Image (cartoon, rainbow, N blue to C red):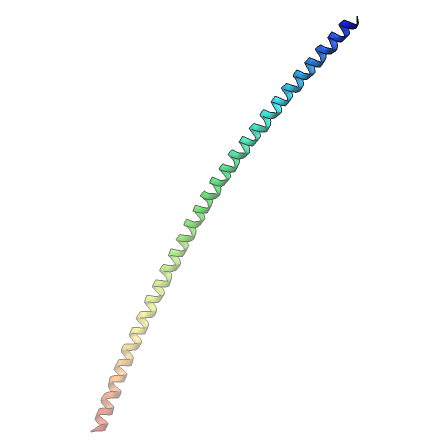
Length: 105
């Protein structure tokens, strides 16, 4: 009877060892899968961040181009105004020079 009890205990111990071994294997697989999923998620997140960065850069470049075009247009208008004023001043300067020349005679 003691032999039967010992055999039952050994079978129970063997079954417990197998259960523990299976549980350890399953846990290792779960951890491995979790690590792979985490790495995959990190890669997707990096790619999404790069994509968002490119979109933001493109948007800012478009804004910068519009601002630059506005600055050029404003500068052109200011240049035209300066040219008009300088032409008027040339006329005045010529009149003054002629007047001085006439007075000098």
